[in-house]
Length: 394
Image 1 (spheres, rainbow, N blue to C red):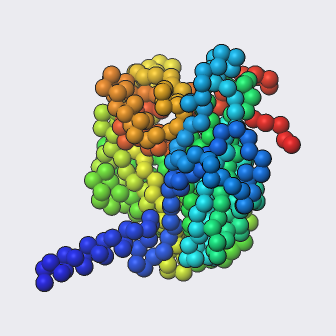
Image 2 (cartoon, rainbow, N blue to C red; image 1 turned 180 degrees about the vertical axis):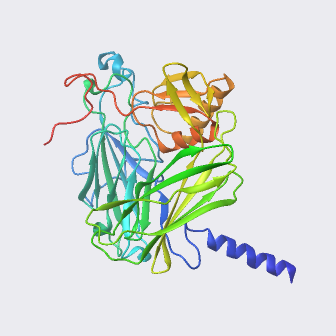
Image 3 (cartoon, rainbow, N blue to C red; image 1 turned 30 degrees about the vertical axis):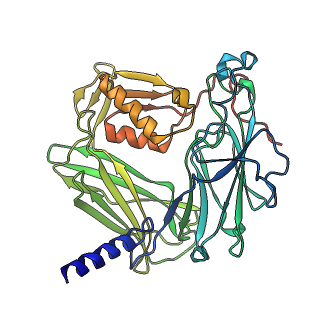
């Protein structure tokens, strides 16, 4: 009887966690890693974006992928781009849509396409990027087919030789996800956590949530935030109604201040990580949930003493690093990034400057967890002519 009970408990456990964010009573978002079984072709391929296209002779690979790193060295390409020729790579992926997705919002999320990227679904163009370090998401709900296979096609270009002053790599060099969520949901990167006041006894946590799907609506919608300690224990929570009748496409909602008693501070030596679990409850039913990790710490810069972390002076000891991983190229392999950070910590470093652009989400997540301070840069732009990575409108 005991063995049977254990078996039933195990089956329930598997069922409860089979789909990301889904439980028996609440249906929230699904996040599917879309890194596997892509077809790749180096060089331009006219009409490769079309639904019916013969890609049987293309290479099959998994992401992340840098098509430039394996190209032969070319002295005419110039040192600014790593002596690799500029080029174009095409990617195609076939997948089936689950009938349970009907009526929901279906998104393709690209963490980065290097350097210029265009995306089609079933022959219809659905998105582009002119700055491969930022990534983007695109709504493909209206383009999916449920009675046959679907095809994603991506064209990635390294751009012109003068578009960068360092090696960029090329292609789908970061993770790709397919996201299935309710029309009323948390927006992309829609959770922002700050710690405006910290003492030895307690800390104030400010959480801002960006909502989608509520424009001009009078929904009975509530936002719930649960804060989880580094030990995995819920230590605080807040709940409030979402605004009604707002005319904005996305709505930023500032939650009431949440107090945490006896906070465990984040530092380079003790990188304590808290988690904010944000849920949307529509008519009493949970329709979306996302988690955002954060640390509780004070940062202070002053001309008199430089930089202080949690009231203690800290010297930034680290590197100014480009986003590639040496011989691995620009492909953002999380395990390789983790190894690099472990080596830096072993050397006594505590800091990385992201020269000169946004890095991958996995990079920033690992830095939080390993106790590494990040000086985060947005772009590298010297003039209106030099090292401009974008493209002119067609």
